[in-house]
Length: 256
Ligand SMILES: Nc1ncnc2c1ncn2[C@@H]1O[C@H](COP(=O)(O)OP(=O)(O)O)[C@@H](O)[C@H]1O
Ligand SMILES: [Mg+2]
Image 1 (cartoon, rainbow, N blue to C red):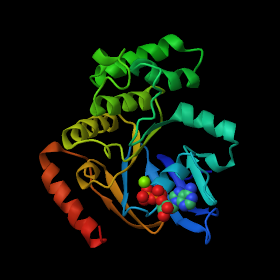
Image 2: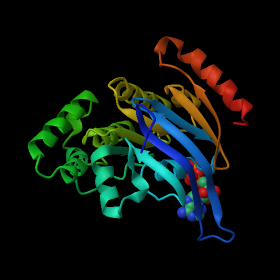
Image 3: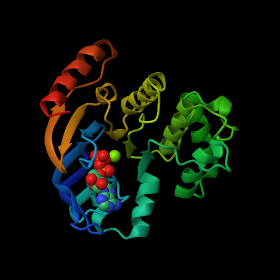
């Protein structure tokens, strides 16, 4: 039903209310959002403003209370749980602050697992893609290590590889640098910049303006409403400081 050209994700009038609390928590209050094909969209806002909830509702990890979400024209809110998990496995990649790795598998098998679940009959192709990804993101030498035998930065690069292993249409990241020091954080943002440059659509939540400055566009949430949106244009390393300063000034106008 989507009429917008080149839209990867479109959501209309999204609301989310958690009813387990008294009074119920109205966390999203009518969000309209279009993410363009190949766009790197950054979601910002104070803690508790609904950033993670928005990410979960547009990625099918949770269901909105009302409103619609379309991924490449397909209405996600009409899918069954089984259909939705198939869409997540084959078309979406996820990166979180914590890696959620399995302690009994080495790094390579952790990365491989969701790709094999997504396409059980294409084992050789998945292994080749995973090995290439680990090479590209500089973790090939730790592929047989356990998850406690690598650095935090290496682990986060492993979660990037895992998210890309099924060649997703869109990559979602919730505070991907939230647990990293600044050099590891730069490292991860360089990886995301590289992924964006190769054409993958990215939606990233962050509270860090330096990370946010990598995006094409930043949206600002307040109390579950989209307060404002700012186009940054294409990232360039040469203008990083100016870009970060301008973004910070804009964020401060919104009480950041
Ligand atoms: N499962 C839940 N049940 C009740 N309230 C929730 C639930 N998840 C999130 N919230 C509330 O929704 C608000 C927004 O949460 P969240 O989306 O995690 O914010 P952010 O990521 O911007 O910090 C918070 O006040 C939080 O307490
Ligand atoms: Mg959050």
